[in-house]
Length: 338
Ligand SMILES: Cc1cc2nc3c(=O)[nH]c(=O)nc-3n(C[C@H](O)[C@H](O)[C@H](O)COP(=O)(O)OP(=O)(O)OC[C@H]3O[C@@H](n4cnc5c(N)ncnc54)[C@H](O)[C@@H]3O)c2cc1C
Image 1: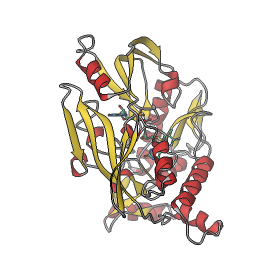
Image 2: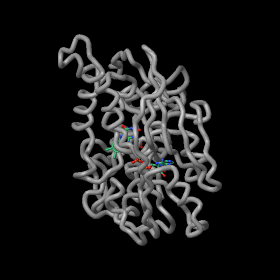
Image 3: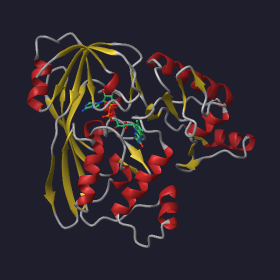
Image 4: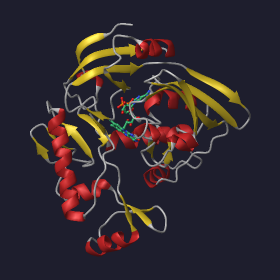
């Protein structure tokens, strides 16, 4: 294991922000991780666990130790004719896990195809897209506490999953390292195409009985058309969560804005697309220097060139202020700010 000093993180975050980390180490096993956490070299250094940096905005140099989790391996555990438990190391690329499952006709995560990042980060914000969330198939995970190196297994209810949220994004933020994740998946999968854009595409392609492989292909095509590729233009996907408002507030908004977009969560709560609010405030495709919003998808803040993390953060604050002033709605960050 080699500890690097003062390294640039430019290629380790999808915003492509050029900041430095005081120390950096990559671990490939639980033993190596424990060795680093127990090491006398870093007891007082703040520590950050990094996957592929697709949900992080570095606003300054990191004055501590970054541990890149590269624990690999995919295994099929318990299996019967209906269900199979699949275990993956935290350092497996999420989409490689999805592809591995689909190649074996194991279903349940195909709608989550092509989400960037590592398996170990998937539970952090309960990744979700196109009508599926990680919690729908989550079984359990293993990990290690940063402070005392104790191992712990979390079952689903202990993870406190909710919309783009979990215990690991709150009480346990930077305190617990996920080392492996187990999912309970289907050996006799049914394709889920209830989500409108997927359904429309199934119909357009005239697929009578879509398979999970069809769904993966459709989701990948939709994503490639809709979202900027971080390799070409720095970004971390949706910068903000979609806000949820109470029915009374929704009624006021609906009256004022007949073109308001929304989804009913239940009888009392309504989700408003953050992209709609941001666009209404005139932020679609707006750019200040090298930081701005994407021209097609204003919810995605992008680095058009050499924007600093601070500049990107400032844009996010301007957007938040404008949405608050115009709609009395507070946007919450989906991206982790450092
Ligand atoms: C183009 C694009 C599209 C996206 N689309 C979606 C989408 O549709 N749905 C969605 O939910 N997300 C989406 N995202 C966000 C992102 O892909 C996910 O949040 C992903 O799970 C982040 O994985 P990562 O490995 O890059 O995590 P990182 O960005 O490296 O880390 C994210 C957070 O998790 C922590 N962390 C990482 N690994 C571990 C670990 N092993 N143990 C403990 N803590 C850890 C980090 O400290 C950090 O706080 C998108 C991002 C991009 C760039």
